[in-house]
Length: 200
Image (tube, rainbow, N blue to C red; front, side, top):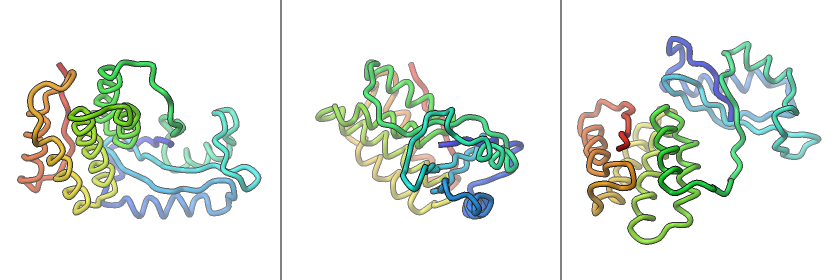
């Protein structure tokens, strides 16, 4: 995953497909990179890509990414950061992981937040698993929002509310009632935008 600077909000979710087409075109002469998808936040363009070596998918370490790839991306917009999507075993408490996921959500890194939550969701049971699934669905909805897929966004938000419906009050450092209230306002207002999740 690579993050390009969205300076002065030059790119918007409405032109997400054009950005994807442009980036694919920019790398059309490269045989070792595949631009899979893009998502556009207020702060960055998130580029989902795969790198190949000798025809095989190879998640290289950061020192193996060719400078030519960095240069080409920088010709489009400045690179802010990059990371690899590799499932890791968390050594943190569930509370710490949830705090990390909320931090990522609040800076509009919804895909990564989703990935972080999945790690603890897999190990959870009962009501906790259902609530975590509801939070993961919020992340998933906003991934579609960043791609301007509004119908899918609303549909997934409604599914997340169903998962959270029976749960109230505090869940670790969050308030589920505040989250559900934000979701309901968002759906009812038709003024679709991101929101922040508060921690306590």
